Length: 394
Image (cartoon, rainbow, N blue to C red; front, side, top):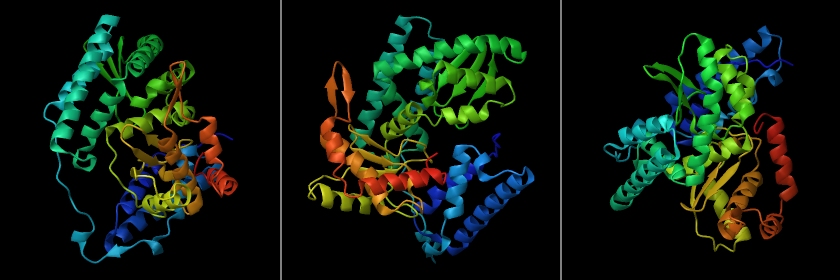
């Protein structure tokens, strides 16, 4: 069955979920949200009817977003009478010069042509990352007190100060450049060479002509793409989006989502335990009581930013943070399914990483034995599979 692409559904679902999970809202605002949800659902239904297509014809991310919107139970959402209590602002810190210095590193990376230049850029990344961490530690800045783009810059710097990650970035840039330069010539609109940067952006790519070539901006996790996935990207750029569905599916890969989750965690997680249907604080308390004799120190807990495909949880050892996919904040996800993912991530906290032959192994035999101790192990797996079949996990 051919795929039917409908723009904007994922963006609406993400925005609605974040707002509903942020806390009580006013009845008037909730009514506006409900109208937006109904309008989005009617629009999707109308487009499907026009094309005589079923929900299965939608790309996986769109299908998951549609399922989320259709499942929102507005009768169970708390409202407040006083608008001033619906949202409270906190102090906001900025890092003078961070954005321009970070952008300078990204632009210079796009032009790096030899190992010496890359080594120099790595030193700059480490230095800037250390400066950011000193500022945060000195002023005791919490993640929620940082602007979102400051968190993005912090996560990017922390991720690529790891030399293997930076080496993979440079290799990806060169592999894609070898594919893009001929395509730029054939396009007749852009000139080579491609100046490729992997940075936090919205969308799948941006092309901008410059005096010395074409600036190509891509989402940071795209540096994990294989040659085949980069070929889809190039085709999508210059063939009117005909590879869009396959390209979107490539962003749901384990490698892409793992990098995305780690970048978000390194940037600083704004703790948000309350979801629309589940509360991570309650999940942690249940799991800690039942499986760790209430002896596990609570890590920082949060839902991640968007609906994910395979990556349902992530534990950051450095920042002691558990991040759970908001895909699980769903009416089809029973509490024990959320608890199972929470338990899995807390086992990472308990067991740590085991190193062998310069490689880390998180899922050791001891880890797997402990994981099987979860009382509703089989039921949780079945629930996650049902969620996947309904569009929740892909």
